[in-house]
Length: 419
Image (cartoon, rainbow, N blue to C red; front, side, top):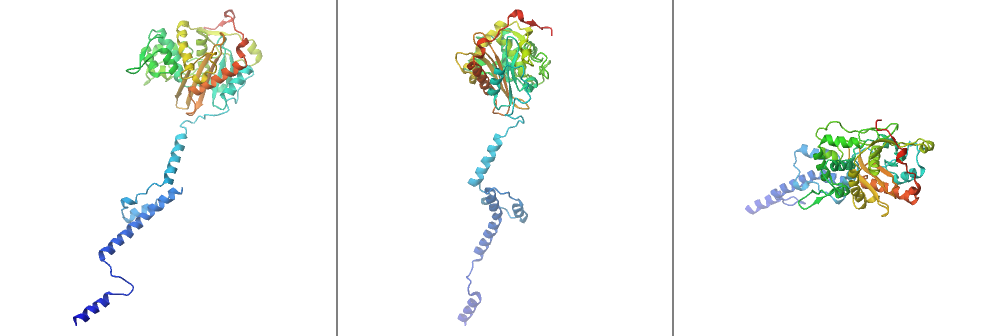
């Protein structure tokens, strides 16, 4: 009887095609299936991203609504494809410029060059090439503008002078007795630097200290003496006087004014006149831009004022030459027998990145001043501007342009100091 009862129970429990299940094991398998279902949307999104498809967030939101927590191992793993996409996006972001001013443009558009020297004009245009900038070439003994590429920018483009302001700071520091040519400023515990090296390398700390010792009033005095804050040209239409604040700007240390040109704005014409005064030993001429070849032939130099600091100006020349020989303006050098004296400037204002270079050469006492301003993105800087100026000098040297240039005698000069 007992044996029959056991057989009956087994018959009821056993169903053909099925196996006996462990209740605990069955519960575990059900949980695994539920977790796999929760991970499915995440896997689908990861695959879609790797394939470059747009992904909706509905799937993950649905999981959250059901109250099912996504297991730790369900966090999407970055595949090789997704990592490549991320790196590509990062590169695109790094190449985008924060400035709206283009680096390249037709810089000759709108120019009227009837009164310019055609040889110099051609050399300047070819040297500037596709860059969005300006090249001004002038005779430092007369003030005549021989070429002005991108005339609108040269006349009205007033920008921060960057490190070119160090030329004014150097002369002011020498004249005020703050430094001399041999003065060495300690930069670090083991490194010091003198004026020549500071100009060659464009050392900011050296000129920051000069500015702090000069103070605002003397900075203003010397900057104004060299023509900043006033028009450089004689009856040049549309010219801007730039900006030279009459009062110390708030939150701008004097040292920033003499190392970076903070709070100051100048045009390529103003920088050309300033470097012309250095090139000729202290005579600040009105720049003149002839409108025809007849005007050019009848041009009479007009002296704005005499800067009576020839000895101090002489002391900054080794630093300007060293800048080209081995410093920030190395790209301007093209022939060891043709010395070039110059100063670069690189900085950023709210509108654009800037690359400045102003210079003069010296061929048996015959000189030309070449000023370059570049605007745009990070591709432009002082060394690039120096390279463009070097191409201008090289082209003119190959044509022996300075071999028979006429020089004006002091008797022919007309002073307009009171103008």
